[in-house]
Length: 463
Ligand code: AMP
Ligand code: ZN
Image (cartoon, rainbow, N blue to C red):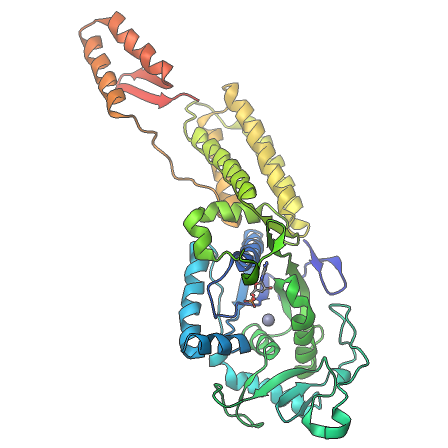
């Protein structure tokens, strides 16, 4: 399998550190509001990646952190006249509900910053003791000039500029603009924890270094997030983890999802085009949205629009009809005709997914299978056992995407149609065949085909 590694910007063979196990970390949400469809895009994309790795036989250990301490959380808690703790509880719960509604498999662990402060302080101490951090009047900062490889992920090298105030005020200001906070000293009325540098809270980046090391062990195999996190967040994670834990590389493969935009615009509250997951699900079926996302490449930018969703809805409905049609096949015999079609589809599907999870190409293999199997059905060459083999295959594929519906639908008749069938039965018993045949034709013109069997009259909907 090849994956595109942002570090080095090229495709590489995926070789996990421990055979058969993938240790994966995906940056989680800041829980001060409901998840939006951009979050949903990223978590669905990584859900598909995780499920494909499982399909390939790997065991996957996935960690997603919950950022429940953050400047934005404090601002929102103040606005709502509540605490970051209440706000965090509320939206963590809502995040889990949203992920479940989107059929996203739960992570193995969801560590929360408020419950990891001691471990985070330990990591900062390591950095401080090794000389990678310094204290100022408002916090503890990472000194990026001490980490020679700073910029290796994003290609953004630190500028030479210094803040300019350091020289005069010495230890009271940070040295370089890009030096980032590991610990922020508390201002009045801010939530705080005790630390060797006084009361305060962790900076944002340090939580991911701490939690990935604590819950997965280093190096981790796959680290994910959307492209917006490459700089500075992931660059800073590398600087922290590689310096604190003496491990290089801290992450073997960096995978980044493309952004989701809305009708060509960046989604933002100020533009009024912000769609939350509950708003999405009030309007669309979760599987349609998953299908919309899962048929795109995880790295591509996605444009969300009514038309694009309509298109996804139609294609998915067509696939679900195909499954229903397969259920209706009755022809006896072996499944020979379908076997080469299935193995070709599987081969092409895996080839595409093995190549950096190329889902659009993988789906074309499924659509080609649909066309060929439909042709077999039209020519009455697909047997029942063949149809069941196709259904089995589609179920396996759907263990990766979770978009299809396998529930066997019983097409239903309305009351009049039921009455007509009963009347025809009665007429046949009375040997009034001409009148009975009229009813058969009447129903056929409505697309209801009657089949007389020794067990009585059965019916199916014509296609
Ligand atoms: P946040 O809660 O903003 O820290 O984001 C949580 C995760 O969602 C991160 O991996 C982000 O990169 C990702 N994310 C945020 N906005 C979008 C978007 N519009 N499209 C795709 N992913 C996003
Ligand atoms: Zn992170």
